[in-house]
Structure formats: C-alpha cells, structure tokens
Image (cartoon, rainbow, N blue to C red; front, side):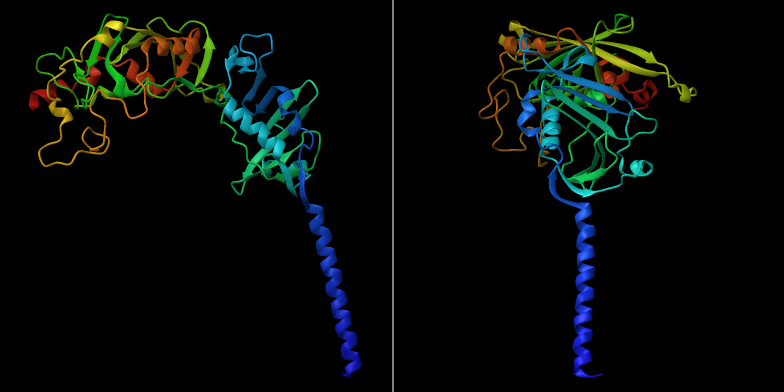
Length: 402
C-alpha cells in the first residue's frame, strides 16, 4: 500500500473514532443531567411549608405545623395521632434532602418497570414507593421516593411524570407512620432507681429494692421460705423499664382492659414514676385467620416528687457495699461495675459536669410531655412491668434439689 493510501486510511479511522465519540457523548448527555436540582425553587421556601403528608403501602400520616395563634406555635404534630408531637429532626432531614436533591441520571419511564426501582405510586395496588407531599401558602413539592441505591442515593419520580431519576440524596424513611413521631416517653437510668413496686389487680405486690446506689442487683422482698431467685440479677430488668422507654403507638384516652396493673418507680433523689399498664387483644388480619390474637400493651405515665425520699439517708449509708457489688479477692472488676475505673465517681456522686436533677422540676417536665397520652410499648418492656413473684423465683423442685 502506498504512503498516500496509508495517510487516507488513517484519516478515515480518525473520523470514525470522532463520530463514535460524538454519538457516545450524545447518549451520555441524555441520561446524565449535570446536577440539575429536583426542586429548584423550594430551598428558599422551606420555612413556608406547614403540612407534610407521607404515604406508603401501609397508610398515610399527615404532619402539620401549629399555627401562630396556638400555644405551641411552630411545633410540628401528627393530625392522625390526636396532635402528638412529630420528630422534627427526621422531618427536617427529609425536607432538606428534598431541597438539595439533584438529578444524577435518568432511569426508566416505563410504568411496567417502576417496581424494580420502588417508584410505583403507593396509592395504586402494589405500589411500593413512598409519596411525600409538602405544601405551604405559596410552596408545594411532591415526589415518590423509591429504593436506596449505592447507600448514598435513591431512586425518585415526580408523581405527575413518567420519567424516574437517580438522585444524590438518601433521606431516612421510617418503617411505619409512628416512626415520624417523637419516640421518647421517659428516659430514667436504672442506676437512679432505688425501689419498684409492681401492684397487680388481684392484690399481689412485687417489691424490689437496692440497698445501696452502687449495689449490682436489686433485692426482692418477701421471698417465701425455701425459695430463691432464679439468678441474682433477675429483678434488674424491672428497674430498667424507664430507661429509653419509647412508644410504638400513641393516642388520647383511657387504658384498654380491666385487669390493669401498675408499677411505681422511686429514684434515690426522690423522683417517683407511676406507670399503669393495660392490654387488649387485636384480631389477626383476614388473610391470617389461623394466627392467634395479638396482644397490645398500653401504658400511662405520671410523675411526682417525694421530698422524704430525697432527704432521707440512703439505706445502709456508712456501711460497706454489699457482696454482690464487690469483686472477689484477686478478681478484676468487670467493665461498667463499681471499681472498674479508678477515676470513677464515688457512690452517690455525679459525674463531673453533671448536675443532680431537681425531682420537682423533672416531674413537671415529664408530666408536661406525657399527661393525657396513652402509649403502646414493646412487649418485652410490658413483660417486665407485669412480673409476678413466681416469675422471679426458681422452680420449687429446683430449690428443693439444691
């Protein structure tokens, strides 16, 4: 082949590569948006939003901001839960994510394929997306959020458009509607609890107490002769109930059930917490007729302060800690147990920078939050609140054998 023909062939090859590159660039520009904002005008109007509706396959929750004339102006509440406060942290994270969201890549516009990305409208049969609609006086946005992609992104689609997108945000979406509510009922550490009395409707009382604030385990009162505890820490779970006690549902109204029990917690500093317990059976769904009725456990909470407890000397004050709180000779204390940290505060002392809570003020804050509400709680928490003495004791034959 002559040199002239070689040059011509080289030029042709370069032209072909140029055409292929141009075609490839065109295709890429069709699917890549260069960071186009999903809702260009909403970020400056976030403070104007006053209603957010979130719909999934299980139902809808509507969160509303209280009007200026209300006593709690600016607070977000759930209209479907009798105005219970919303978790504003989760709501804010969702709205900021939508305001910042940018389109990264075009995805399917075929409704038959929406299910693969989770962007099918939840108002339609089989729709697995989450429809978020937010509106205010002069602002409104609506989007169907789909599955998570690459951990940091999500698929999304505007409900009035067929085109779906990959966006650069991944807002946290709770598994159910109550996940948008403020979850905490109370949070009182177990190491603050001095005593608990569980009172049953039939007259049985279960009483547990700590001899010292630094004692490892609660002692159970009125153990019958010849019986013993299942294990030394068996009663500790009862005292742990008020720690990080969160709701699974909430409503106004009385406790369900007639055979309600009650548990009274008293702290070493004089805070008293009365937790009443009720339960109700819930029929299984129609498609699961063979299942047993589910039992829901509901509670009410009332706080008060007992100055006599706060001012009284701690039981056994001035004595050596109980054997349960002391490591055996030559045995290193476990992490979290008294003596595990040489720098740890002495029994009864607060950690550096932590003030002892005033029981009257703490009770007022708790009542301001929980008064008038009935909460459904987790089964394992309710089980501890309804313990009977026999639940704490070993079997009679086991005790006799020993």
